[in-house]
Length: 287
Image 1 (cartoon, rainbow, N blue to C red):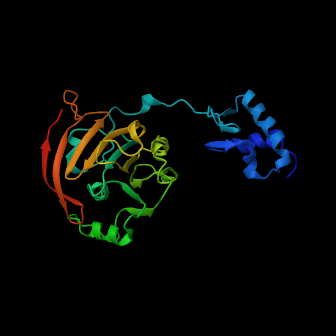
Image 2: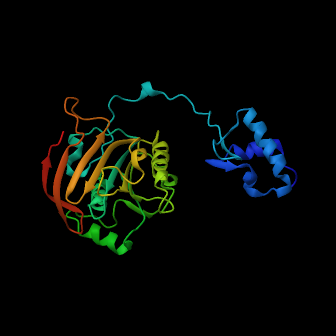
Image 3: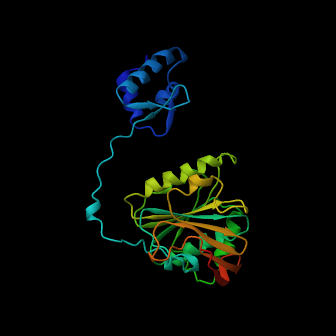
C-alpha cells in the first residue's frame, strides 16, 4: 500500500470502535517502513481532537466520541414501565424502566439458569423475547429444562434461542424486546475485570430501543457480587444474587414503594423440574 494518507486514515478511524494501535490502521495494510509516518498521522489527529491516546499504552488510541445528539427527555411519558415479569414476584418490589439491565449473579448450581429460562417463558406471550445462550450443557439440556417446565410452551416456541459465546452487545438491536443472556463469562476465563465492560456495552446498545436485558453472571458462593466485582453493579437497575436455595436483592435503583426499599430482601426456596420451577418460597427479610 502507498504511504499513509492523513485524510484516508481519518476516514477509516471514524468507523472504528474500541482501542486501536497506530500500526493497525486500515486493517494493518501498511508496511513496517510506514509505521513512523503512521505515528505522525495519529499525533496530528490527537492534536486536532479526533483521537485520544490511551494512558499507559504507548501507541494505542481511541476515537473521541463527541457526536452524540441531545435527547428529547420531555417527550418521554412519566414512569413508563417495561412490562417485564420476573420470577419470585419481584416486580412487587422493584420498578423496571425500559432501556435498562438486570443482573442475576448465581453461584454454581444455584438456580440461575432456571431463573433466566423462567423469565423467558413468563414473558413469551407478552413481548418479543430472545434468549442468548452459550449452551453450557448442550442443546439437549436446554430442551429438557424448557420441556419440564410447569408452563406449556407452544410449538413453535414464541421466543428465539440464539447460541452466543461473546460480544453479546452485537445482538442487542431490536426494539421492545426482552433479551435474556445465559451467561456472560470472562473472555479468556480469567479476565474477570472485563465483565463489567461487557455489561456496559449492552446497556449502551439498549438506549432508545425500549428493550430490556436480563443478564446471568457467575459468582463465588462467598459473596453477593459476581466475578468482575463492583464493576458489574454499576449499570444494573436490579441486581440479584442466588446461592443454594436462596435469592437476595442486592440492589434496586427504583423501588415500587418509596417508603420501603427492597435492598437485602431475601427468599429461601427449593427447585424442581430440571431447575426451572421454584417451590416452597419463603421470604426472609434482612433489612
